[in-house]
Image (cartoon, rainbow, N blue to C red; front, top):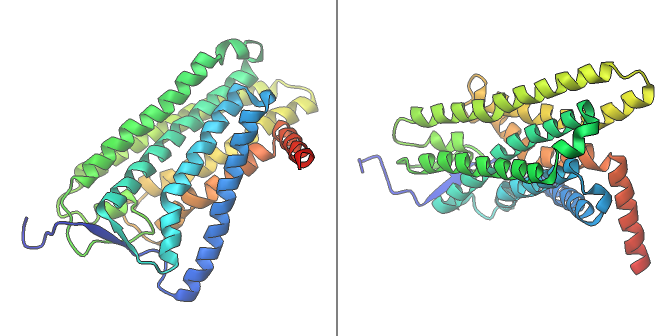
Length: 311
């Protein structure tokens, strides 16, 4: 090691603010959002598992999305809440590496999963008579496994390359968790190769899936334009509108954060975008994607009646 390099055992997360009053307010807000995320996604998972009417490919993938959102939030938020309470801002090197690793796995998995869900909607609307034949359970299981496998392999690759770099002190991460770009800034060596890999992974997991999603929805739009009845229009839009909303929020922010100009500089804007992924998006997904759905509402009412009668 050179004179300005040290063996790093922990990092310091600078977070949002050192103002105690603001930290207390942020703790309350984030605690509410995190609780809503856990309850909303857990409720969707339970409803889909318990109600046989929801045992279809669309809800199967939605179940995986709920799992990803719960894991994604739980990777970063509990430690952030602990820091906001003033229980120290340090995180061990191993803990930081775990955060980076899991963050990348769940983020990349969701990228692929959203593209898979758009294909499901394409088959359901453009080829309804062949839907059951095409979207059979073998294909659904394969697509879900591929989503998780791609996320794990490429997330592990990026995390391993980042964590094998030499780091210099003071190891202050200008973020509320160990975000990979913020940690790379602390390396004592050239990180061009890491940034090129991040950009290449973004092309594969953001631009390519987004292109597939847009192609799917162009075909869906062409099919919708051939529908003459108003109820048909309404049903089709209600089926796809929620997914488009989630896709727009997820991919738009990710592309801006990792592929936009100045994406390597961690600032307040990057913290806000990361906060959106860690709390806001996982909290909104059950509402805009599931609980607005008629079948999910009926399953929820059925579960409420069953719980009420058992009391």
